[in-house]
Length: 158
Image 1 (cartoon, rainbow, N blue to C red):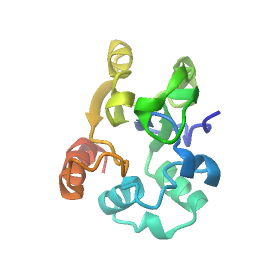
Image 2: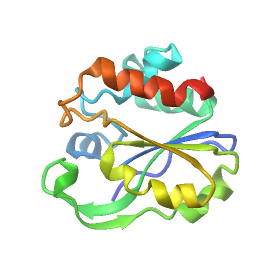
Image 3: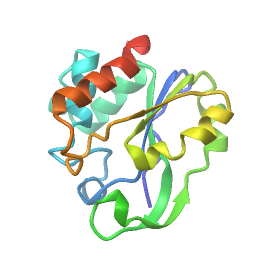
Image 4: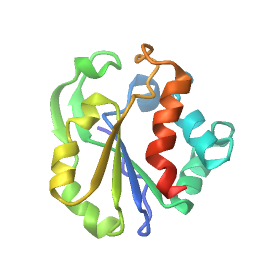
């Protein structure tokens, strides 16, 4: 099973990954793999060294900045951490989103697998952006290019 959302009622931006990898599941936290660029990129954009903080402080910081974090999948079977290995995927219940955080305007998808769910969110009136994955498995794009893509998508919310 995946993790519950990191969310506050006044969130305006939702970042959706696919499903926690092995390192994250073992640690019990989102984006816990030491080479995943999620926290370094988000920290750079928010002007806070999030990677240096304990996870609960990271979560509190993003909630205060009206950013929510969740995954598109609530459960799946997967050998290893690659999205391409996901089987028997079960999506999260996104019908509860409007009740949890009715002010969400934009949904960012961390990678292509998560991005496959973008049309469902666009149909419901959310502005959607599929971003390059922060996963270390997606090494084809340099970190600087990933950062720039994320910067453009988050700019209206910073």
